[in-house]
Image (cartoon, rainbow, N blue to C red; front, top):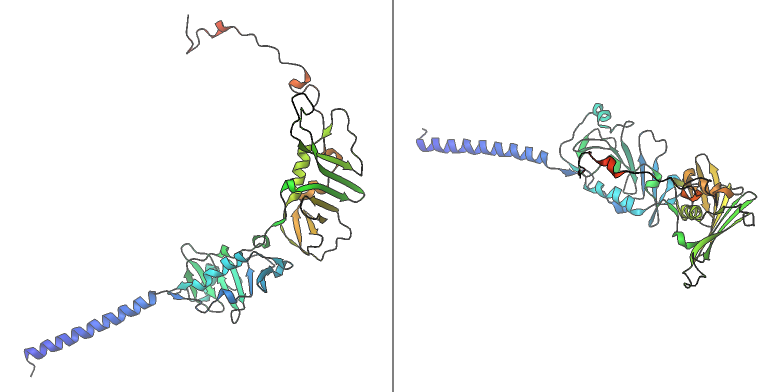
Length: 357
């Protein structure tokens, strides 16, 4: 016989069972929402190779570790700025996600993480078996798919553009980097033609007068095929133009690394840079479409330099080094001053804002 006490005990038991079911259900739901690491065993320090593939890019960026240094294996083993690789790999060990954004292959193309339709495909070696990541595009979270797994996860802290796709984004693009005043002489040999531009001290204007000796300034001595150019009346050496040419050569930036094994037996031009405090730099240049292949002798590394940057130096002529006289009749120097303008103050009377007497 069920007494009132027994009924109370049964009610309490039912309530406990219901509460347990609710707690178990809520626990499952919370567990599903907790983000878990996607690559828990990933260690950037163990990575020895990274390949970056991008859409419509026939050649992948191939980064390889040689000892303690990184190089562009896809671009003649040109030295890489190690921090660029560190910045790219560091976020991978922190990737975490809860429920996947998609679990069917039909969504891969839409999220740009398909086998052939992707924003980035990354293949990483040296940290155990090769790891392949497909990185897509998203508004708040970036879609990421790992290897052949159909599941796509949304992650934060990572973007497709974090994986750079141009060789010059990984290297120090300054192939030659000198202070302009470090250059004492610039020689450009092009076939049988030879141009020599040498920095010399010249007295400042007014030196030798009774007011005392002025501080010397720098100028340029010019030789074309071994002789000073004959100057016509009014012509002078264009020191500003020469200074600009020297500045271009002193700061020579590359478009991309060049093949160091390319032959320089017949260069388009050879540029020699003599310096104040170090041995001369000798650069061989070979025309290559809209660029010049540039190689410093003895360096073992070459660069592709935009023709717009170095072309003016390679195609140097006498006229680019000589300043022409101003045309006759130009400005006040021609001796014809503008005629005076007749002005009668009474013509202003009656105009708004002008006082009347």
